[in-house]
Image (cartoon, rainbow, N blue to C red):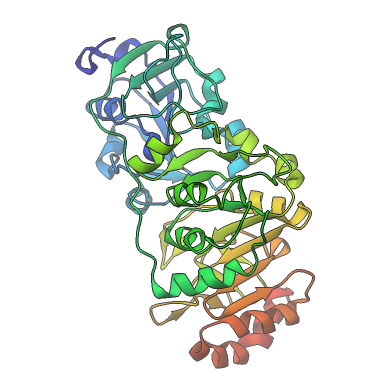
Length: 415
């Protein structure tokens, strides 16, 4: 195993290469720090996911051309500084869209058979590995061995270095009173035996924390958060009534800290899979009682969702929300849910007209939940939707929304 100081990227990078590495807690911090330490080749590009460690800053755009699907965390500053371009794509399409000449990985130590686990993520990285010319890994003793494949051997890896950093940890934040109120409303939509998909953020954590009274829940999600540990240990999440992957919690990445990582180590009840599986529409549709739980920045009176831009800054993503909302809509007994606080400070988040792009079209509207109630928009006309949305808006915003409803509906019909 080489030291990272001995790693000369000039041996492996070619002019015009595309570089990709695992996101969130699975970021190979040692390799990425080495990559951004100097210019190694001309015209290099890199694809960025969720930046838990926040390693990439606008000045690094002098070394690589960055593209990302998300404005989460430090990526927002990159987008604001025009130091990163945006890929506004459904998450399910990433495996086919991403270019990966060189892939950087964070790996678990090898097992007795010399096989390395991808550890904290499979996600789109596992999908693009067959495209890569060069695969470089850093071995981290704190990375768990997780199931789901592929397991890599020395023959699959171009070079391996030891890690110099503990894995990045995604912070668990205490839910606010508003988040708890939203979570209580969402809980009404979740029956025993349902299978859950959860998005990123403290609101999703609050929903999971409020499900201790449920039984035989399953999980099939793009991410597996830290709150999952409590639910599995308490016997709330067992997966025993899942129609697909019975008895197993399925996700693309682990998003949490050391407790989650240790719990996932050699745990056969946790399966990490590639995006082409976790977001596959047929897999999702086959999962009975799939409840998709995703957040939004704002929702208009017709059910269209902006999950990308807040106050002129790109902070979110198209992501997998549409994939899972459509999957839940096709699932027998499924419920597609969008969750959001009714306001951000003095500004209503239930709006007559979106201030950002349409991330989820109104044709995919399902159930919208705020702290003030539940608006089931499925099968409703535009006028009926507006009435339901105003009823769950902040009380002080309802009169104004009522006043602009006719103009908003006319604009929604394009007249």
